[in-house]
Image (cartoon, rainbow, N blue to C red; front, side, top):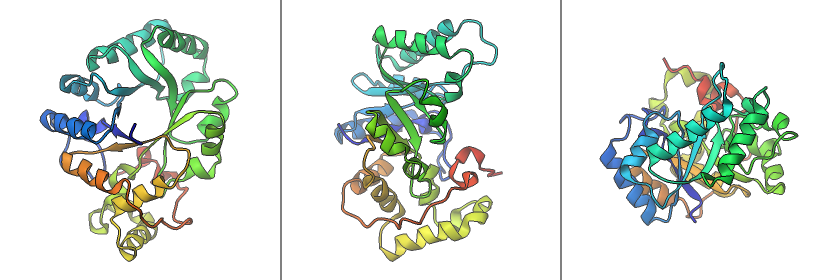
Length: 289
């Protein structure tokens, strides 16, 4: 199994600060999947919240792929948690055109701390027992979310952001702890929505407060004669305890570039090149307008 998984949010939405081509067209999706499969990639990462992503994958045909999807947060007003969860999972399977998911992740760890937690977990475990998914887990935005969750439930999979600038998963000690507890770790936001790959002249003005840090990253890449993509992959390639890197691409050409840089020996970025400013490392906080 490849250490790379194919992220598919671009298949359903116009996604990414560096994305200039918009949502990926259906024909290109098919070409990307074919090339990924030929390279040994066998896992797709999607979510119900990713617009048309699941339906797009279903049209392309994903039989034989390991498909991870994510449930949206529980509605504020919900009477029957089991019925809602079952409908979400069955809807995903129907759109994808498959009989079993590899993993169902929860997009909101807060749902496991609230009044519906028991019903939610019971229903998810029932779906696993019924063979609708092989494993269960959570998708987090900040490792601190695990502090409250861990005494209550141990997921089989944790998906978290991690990249050159966002090292919270490592620095918090949670990556080591997850490994000790036998939890599989999937890392996303490898390129920070493409920000790490953007030349200085193309960065939106809203990133001006972090110009010094971002310029330092660009200068390090130039000094060591590595592309930002190669440098970003080098950083995570050296991190032990990560099972999968979720990489999103807009085209076969981008996928080819990732594949060409995913295994070569490379220098590593300096240990002090990171930020803990959530306004930078959490894209949901970005103000791009």
